[in-house]
Image 1 (tube, rainbow, N blue to C red):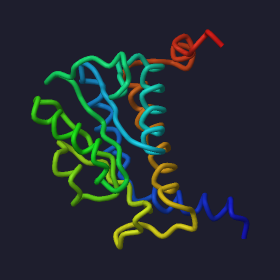
Image 2 (spheres, rainbow, N blue to C red; image 1 turned 45 degrees about the vertical axis):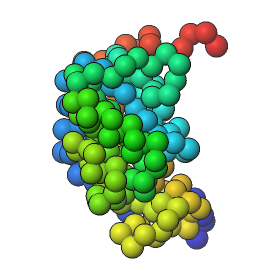
Image 3 (cartoon, rainbow, N blue to C red; image 1 turned 90 degrees about the vertical axis):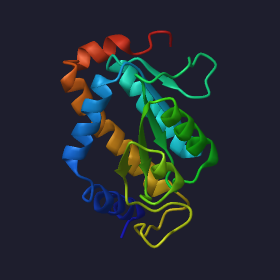
Image 4 (cartoon, one colour; image 1 turned 30 degrees about the vertical axis):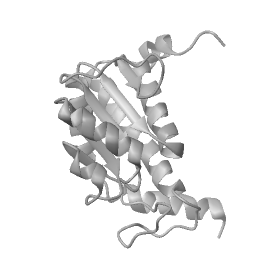
Amino acid sequence: MRKLNNVLKEIEKVINKIDQQHLDDIAFSLHRAKRIFVIGEGRSGLMAKSFAMRLMHLGATVFVVGETITPSITKNDLLIAVSGSGKTQQVVTVAQKSKQLGCSVIAVTTNFASPLSEHATEVVHIPAATKYRNENEAPSIQPLGSLFDQCAHVVFDTICLEYGQLNQVSHSDAFQQHSNLE
């Protein structure tokens, strides 16, 4: 069988275990938030940044933690913290601090019992393989956390579909927010 088909089957197996209603509820939480902050490290951080970018296209006030223009977070804000293992120290530290400040924290992880999940208001569970290959993770032919990152990207785009509908943002509205400097 082709490797591409195997990768697609892995993604489908994981995605089929995720509750669509939960993702719609997350979109509604984002819709209600004054501002949205995202954090992740490595490839998971790139998935978080792509999520922030799409949310910006859909009209959200969104920031990536660690960027030079990121303001202080307040109790009316929401943090999306992405870590496959739920153990990435910087992500856990930011989630803990955000919760102490009274923010809602949504963890996106494979591990309900992780340090990140402990500091979260809510957990989006993506039961995919990470670099640790723990027992609760789906098997994968792919290296490291590729399966988690791919599934996170699909989950984030699905949340954005609902978020865009809640905010009544059409494709052409989103396109108006797309970069025009290239």
